[in-house]
Length: 327
Ligand code: SF4
Image (cartoon, rainbow, N blue to C red; front, side, top):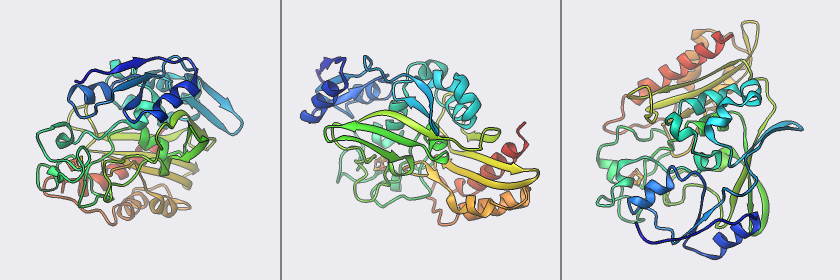
């Protein structure tokens, strides 16, 4: 770990200006990912700008959406009455992530920004284009059991590790950011990037831009929802495959659906063609199986993650069944 400066401004503008003007500066909030990365020498900011004094913790109902402050803690969001009432899918996804201790330290903004858990990324003795552009991808010909089946490139096959992000992309969330050039709103589906030739850039944030909040629009998915995470052990493990499923039902017919997967791509993976297929269909296993087949089109696995080609559709079907049966 290299020596670094630490500052804790109380004004948002000061925090943004500090990071915007200094190539070696980074924001820190809960630190549950960044501190690990610094200890291992994977990220080496020379200045940390602690944003915990900024007033960004509120969870509020506003006109047409719920706004969650970027510094709201994952555990607090998962247990919040408004979230449980309006966005239970998000609550389920948050509770599936990490451990209780981490959820009580990690923030929403930090969860959005967390880096991949690819083992090669975390081992500075091994090649990794994401950590060191041009060094190669160790996972491509190496041990790639946890890796992507959608949207990968020959430069990187890593996955986004967040559970929360899967629910947020399914629910059409919008990320609010503030930066040196002003404020902007980024649809969640456009926030994270596919690896392409530049896997070292994992989001579309610009230098100095700070996540200030997430808006989740009003929707009818308040009851028939399920976040299903398949992992090697039932706690404190990243997803092999996860599915966020939400149904708006009229009796036993589907009015509309939302569907996204985690553990399968460099970004949370929305399944819009499968959603469109489900609209107007009966909520039966046959419909869910057909939707899963549509969802898996274009999937390409590697030597050690072939099992995801079967686990993926099975998890989609089970999540949809769980969502339909939810009371
Ligand atoms: Fe690095 Fe991505 Fe390859 Fe993992 S999959 S070794 S993160 S380039």
